[in-house]
Amino acid sequence: MLCPVYTCYIYFLETAIGFFPDVGGTYWLPHLFKENILGIYLGLTGDRIKGKDLARCGLATHYVPLDKFENLKADLIESTNENTNLKSLTDIVNKHSEIVFNSSSFSFPRMEEIKSVFKLESDSITDLVKIFERLENLSVNGSESEIGWAANTIKLLKNASPLSLVITLEQLKRGINIKTLEDAFNIEAQMVAAY
Image 1 (cartoon, rainbow, N blue to C red):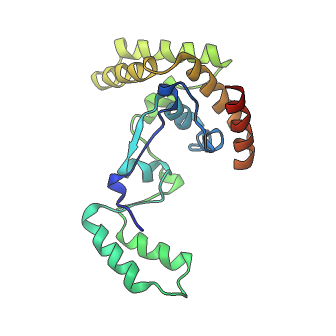
Image 2: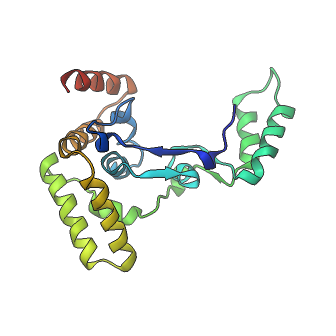
């Protein structure tokens, strides 16, 4: 069954509940964007990603607006049979999509701020302290919109478990070098057992 993307969102709330990203998050969060920053930002803050932004950053392959959804559904029902393959399905969905993910046109709201604030330089505790320092600086010295974003991000981080923030940051930094989802599951199982 298809569900309209506008109702979908992804919310990484693990640090807010005193946990860390699991179900493969060790692998896929750091690999979400070539510089690893977006996954680290999402894993730490628990920021929500909705609709179009899911497809812009690669967490979804397509964004189909609500007004085109019934047409997509009808087209899929009419055009598919036992001989339908992935390419023909993709062509149908592409025809109705407003956004189709393309890694060369990757985008995410506030990406420049995220890249400058969440860059990694040292050990996890020092990196976390520097993230807070950069956010505090931006909340005072940034533009009006940067001040609002920084203040909201500080609030998200302060509502999280401090221990979970450190563990999550270290987990995702190590995840940069993980090669398979299976390796991520193994690491996460060991983390849960130790937690």
